[in-house]
Image (tube, rainbow, N blue to C red; front, side):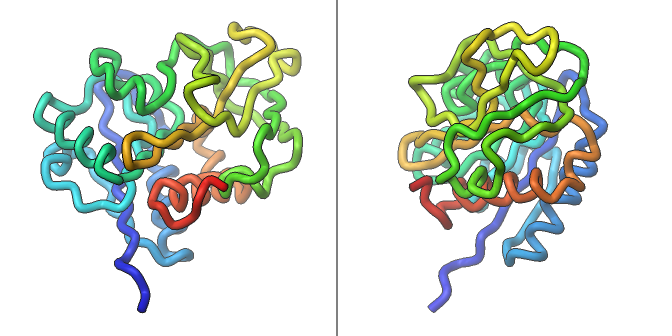
Length: 222
């Protein structure tokens, strides 16, 4: 018997900076759902968090304070009780006044240099989000520094080689994609995904697909 359908909620409300790549991201996840058999609903209506029925929730370049206290409490219960979270790019620029969210996303955004090419080092090729990537992946993106290094609290999947670009501020150890358990749920974050063209890149789409499947509990992190 097949299990219940995987239902993915894409949430892209912004209360701060708004990325112009959000529509491309929503469309990419919809197309991944059509191709891989999961349902996708996209919204910026935070009231849905009080009645969540999704298998995984994607925070797609959200920004600022996007949920009120009741919605925050409902989302905490959802994840801690076994739900899945995927944070993409600006999701780390979200919820600065919400300590639990800081734990969930893994690290908050601090700053970034200008958009430029950089080398992304695959630290863990066993995770479904990174198994398809080469040992070093060169691509152009907006390269986030974080307020704290999450290593030790998360499983780092990719890191940035700061010697490959200018303006990095974290030094020799610069995680950029990671995952971790959160209660009985699963959390995944990637700093990639600023340029709209990212979402047409098959390699980046495969990363998103692996992240969603992990967060939904369809595939283990190994």
